[in-house]
Length: 187
Image (cartoon, one colour):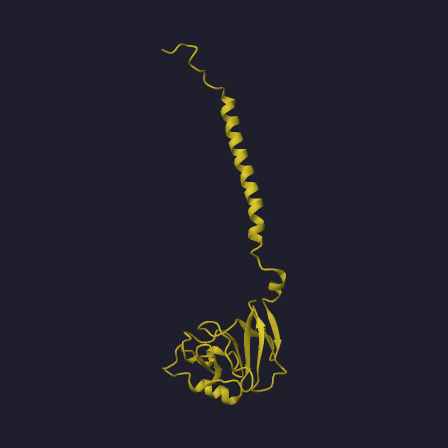
């Protein structure tokens, strides 16, 4: 049987509030400490200054002779720029309505200006770099590019014509700043 001395009196009003304060203060301090520990890890995922500087490149193509192809690097990928001859443009346009294209696209959809084709020089099958940039390289039946890894063949508009590649050579974001300056990259 309980006596009057065994029954505890209710705690004063202030002690519950003090306990709640300590819980909230501890939780807040823990949140701040966690944020301070995690922030450097999150910040490390941001691109470095040298990567940001390479997000856009400008290329002066005034010295590229007609019929020549140049290769440059943007975002750690090769970019093929083809100063196309009338013959190459005609070959590309002749197949615009070809129902046998694996990934249909017209030449006008792929080249902002007919004489200049700008593509990412990576085969869309498994990421090899196709041949065709240098004089004497095999270019295949369609005179574009030939991927020696698995035999994909691209035409003069960068469209896949034969092989295991599932789609055309990708197009980078680019714009002509002037008649001879091409800006490659976003913004």
